[in-house]
Image 1 (tube, helix red, strand yellow):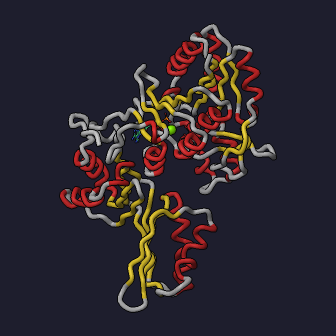
Image 2 (cartoon, rainbow, N blue to C red):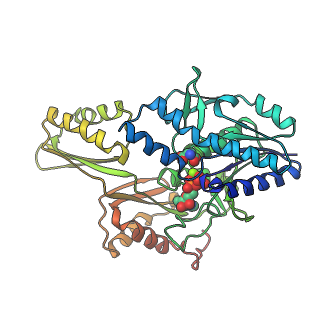
Image 3 (spheres, protein in one colour):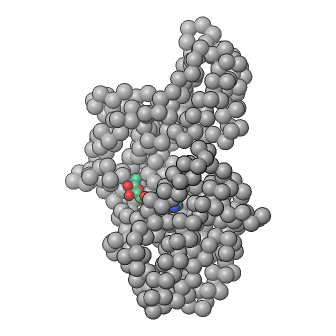
Length: 411
Ligand code: ADP
Ligand code: ASP
Ligand code: MG
């Protein structure tokens, strides 16, 4: 008998019919003798709908009340799901984050899980029930409801799998696994059979939303092997595992894109010690994450600094930066919200040169201007105009031999 944690995303439980089908699938696991813990998201589109209702009332909604609101989406699906299991002749119980006691920090709308009490879950599993847990939510020590950030049901599932020492953690979604790029924008994308935690962390942080980044970090830390697979087929999906389990590493294993960022430039600031700190300190104090930063020295004692932030933080960052610009005597502040970041990721890059230059050649051939570049051991990212996103992704996918009908040679 194994203990299995299965997570189903929003599209997988997006209608009553789908909820009934997922219940049948879960019961097949139970009939095989396994203890089943199911983590569910809200129905697809529901969280977005709740957010837009909130912003109709408050342009920057109260964070505590936002969590009260957003956590309701998952309450609907877990209750309906438990009913579907009962209707199919078995027994289930739905539990909210605070009933389980998934204790989190009090950072509303992006709380972190501190501790999970597994006693209640074990009690119900031992009584033969399917335990259905609301994804994406928790509770503070003080009893306030929190949410974990968008896509956070993946994190709930992995954290539960770690706490319960589950034998398997399966992430069911609307595609067959992790692909070489988003299959919804590149028809030539191929499913990857196995990928390392580190590559998956990079892919997730650079825009591949198939797994939420914190879930991958947790899986790596607690050595939880993840199986990402489709709700709508029986096919084997993608295993996310430790590097030593993969015999052949690919040069480039995936291409990602993100349209969530914006670029900001502060022009002609004094080129002297302390200026970068004056610019970025108010931004970081406001909890705004800065991604890429480049600095260009001009003639004389002046420099331009360009950096990227999430588009959702763009207005706040511009406001803060304009104040700083006036204080330090900068020439101007300008921004661009129509950028995209396209990245190539692969552990094989560690031991190979020339990958970045191939990427730049592809961009040049397609006439795409590169505005910013950043690299790490296993990735290269370029900021480009948003309108070229698909073109860049598809051209890079082909150039690095990732296309379906052109399988790469093993490294
Ligand atoms: P769920 O609701 O099940 O959590 P998500 O919408 O969060 O599903 O994630 C699945 C989506 O991720 C897919 O429909 C696909 O468009 C997108 N995606 C982006 N990059 C990738 C990738 N490299 N591999 C697979 N899917 C990807
Ligand atoms: N419902 C939440 C969201 O849409 C959490 C999730 O689906 O993982 O972000
Ligand atoms: Mg998701």
